[in-house]
Length: 399
Image (cartoon, rainbow, N blue to C red; front, side, top):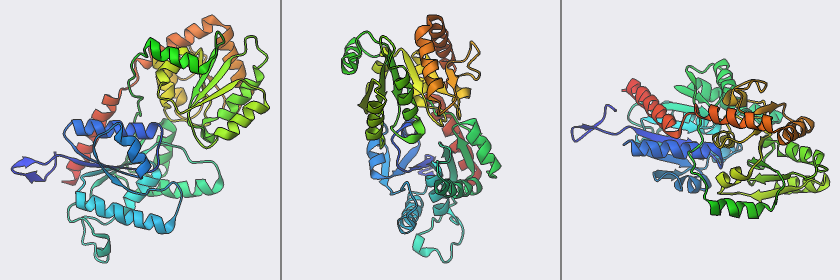
């Protein structure tokens, strides 16, 4: 698939994945792409911080290289990282670099700038002596909250828009944003949830015992305990339904920096909220859920939302980012796979959840719509095949 030949045969396409710190959907997506590309005969390398590599190795057995793509600007450290990334890409002779996240994308753009040319004055950076690799950047997230964070993020976005050969976006709003910033080629690219198996009776029984809800309804959220996920809004809603009989058991699976603050909030509003921490038995938890809640302030294509749809669970979610497109648009429609509400509105969230609990016909309609909608969702193999075709096209253009 490339112009290089070894022993008379075309050498395999060489794809380097670059990403920063990742624990959720983006890490699982990269692992799936890397494993799929490796299985298809491509040469694959992943460049990421050591903790991210440890997570990815559990899902993708490919060559790795530790690279400190930090989450915050650190000029001296970042310069060293760019130099190490440039040297690695040059020595590994990458055909395509696929960076995930605008920070990794900006680092990759700077690392490969000028490669394939004379590069006079850049000898200390060990420039590549073959053509410049094609650069693909996947944008997974919207800008963060806070003025300083948005300013830095905006700079990184522009570097990616102006230097990448192709920008892939996880939702339509991100696609429009990167197109407005001047990206030469922008496409929406699905980030599908991995296929899961039906949990065993023993797994479900263990999850039921861990929750200890008895016969009470279970309201489930699965998310990183971070501001974007809106779990404080869920706890505020749980405080509003604490007087119901029986009181719903609100279960949150996941870990993150807000664990202590969320526990304190639950105690303050006297809500029955159980924080389970990180769990590996999400399918079993879904089996027990009466309602799945996704209260995020922004999402592209939340993996838990896709998993809940495939499980045929009633879903209450915020109408943000790519969620309406994923579940089918207008929540008033019978084809919509979720009950959509505004973000940051505990009263609306409480009303929606209690409506589902109190109305069996509404719950049944949501279950049916979610299951039907999930049948059209792309699979991880669909994403792998689309990625390989994209890499081959871009590499051929460099030949």
